Length: 438
Image 1 (cartoon, one colour):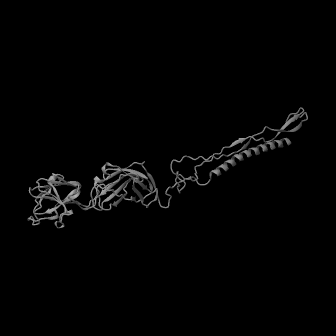
Image 2 (spheres, one colour; image 1 turned 90 degrees about the horizontal axis):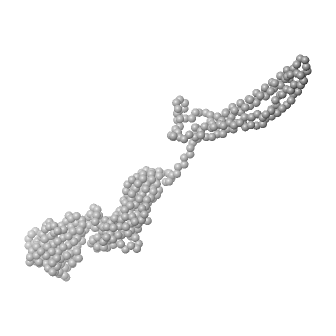
Image 3 (cartoon, helix red, strand yellow; image 1 turned 60 degrees about the vertical axis):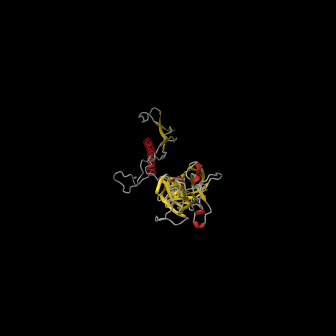
């Protein structure tokens, strides 16, 4: 829900017209689907101010509402939702104008991306209907100057053809009447008669073309024989810029009548609404923005991508051997001489040899503990699999052999070395015993 305050143009008499609108914007789309923006329009409840007719108009006036939607992100631009509604019947100044129920616009989506859609101002225009409106001589918009010089005839016979069966007239020279109107052209309606004379015309204070007519003569310039031929268009002017104008009608001939029966206001079809009627509506609620995600067909409108690393051939296992002392009883031959002999015997004495068994100091047994710590280098560029192998550096891991194989080989080598040492020690001990036994 977005609230607006509107002023100017058809927000009459300096009032502010408050609107409550509902903006509809899709949040997810697939490429190819249209981005449709919709606005529901209503006068705000409880607010008496309304847009009003700026003048007198025949049936067919239109109210046009144009929105302004800013689009940013993957695309940058402006959408302009529009809606129009015809006004029923004739209009008088201040008549309440009907609003269109809604306005809309759409944009074609041709690629994936994310957009930010933000409603901005609204513009409310009134376009007057093309056509003619007849205004009688007693309308308030018609003023008579030196009013005492003018008098009114009412209830004239139908045969005289006067519009409304009445008219105003004066025979005083330089007395004049004024008429304010809004349109693109104007016609002067009066009687042609033998009693009438020269009448002059000015528009907005400037002599019109033609600037005068003789109401006692026919269009071909010959004198009329009609005594009272009313309801005739004696003078016209077209081609005015649409807007408010003032026509002045002056009696130029003393002793002759200048008569006013009616005026016909002409409005041609306008290409654009008049700028003077435009009301501008600004946001009074908090600004609103909607994010729209446009995805490729067959994908989620709001994709979440999880990346799993493939096995990395650059992982290097680290083998850490450790020595763990383990008490292992070993047999160490010790010779203890008896008597005067020595270890190698004595020719003059008897030598006796005593074999004893002792437990030697525990010797360390080598235990290999392999700890594999994957060391993953920080990649500086995407790894690319290159089919050919060999030759110069290609970025491909060498074939054959794995980290586990290297670990097994290392373990076997260390274990073999340890066992080889033990076997060697036992062989030396056996060799020593063999020498003694011999």
